[in-house]
Length: 330
Image 1 (cartoon, rainbow, N blue to C red):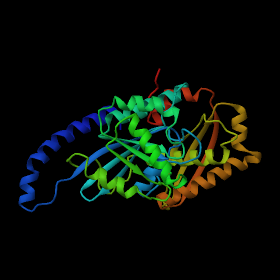
Image 2 (cartoon, rainbow, N blue to C red):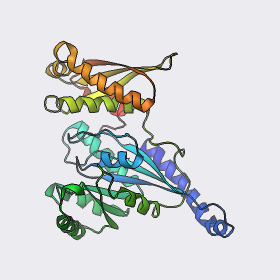
Image 3 (cartoon, helix red, strand yellow):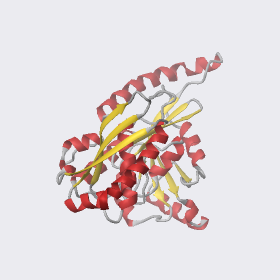
Image 4 (cartoon, rainbow, N blue to C red):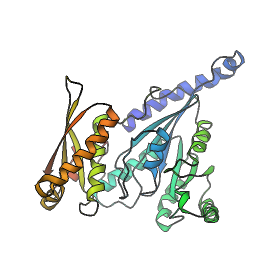
């Protein structure tokens, strides 16, 4: 969904909100079904704060890939959560950092654009890192945001309770937060409290998405992201950040299986050799791991074919940015 589409969607919703608010009291008096609520919640934070793990936990399914490598998430990923009569759309955004390369600039621009369009901003912080200097620019930008802001201290199972209270005090001195939550996205501790609070604070209005939808990410892109995750997990020390995966072909077969062709782009010949491995062993192992996970998500047999291509300027090509849902930022 582009920013323009989302703005139009929010305008339509605003009209619905006014009508819903006007009629809510009368319906409640007549014993009719309670009015629905819905809203967008932007997850912002530094790289590796645990935003993707958090959104996967809330949705109850894998919609955003997770690795220990910084800047794993490159584009906006929306996860949809139903809580009673409320639909919460969580937007997992690239980690915010000081960008230098075109891809980095596009990722950070996408993050801030997503935050500006949200109803509520959720700042996700690695409790183990605490209040660090690299968060200062991020906080300065958030102070200028008009939306309500919440602080989410993640990975609390790695920090002593007294330290958590001190970290909370530091953030509250830096800027006001509507509420502070302490969670462990990894084991789910505290996550239900976040959902319950948000459900009571997003505006009344109709749902944005069908009730049974978990994400708006096309399956072609999710499949490519899963392969990129397996690539990064296996080659994180050897292959640089500048690698991309694109789903080139998706064919549903008569026997109920699906054939998926994907291209793995790298920028140097040495990277291509690393990704292929001796006699193709590395790319084969990556493909096997990705195929198993994609098949589990689809619930059908998957035939995955990976091709490695050298393209020295892929990270400067507009087409690749569009494939990831990003725009090039000058």
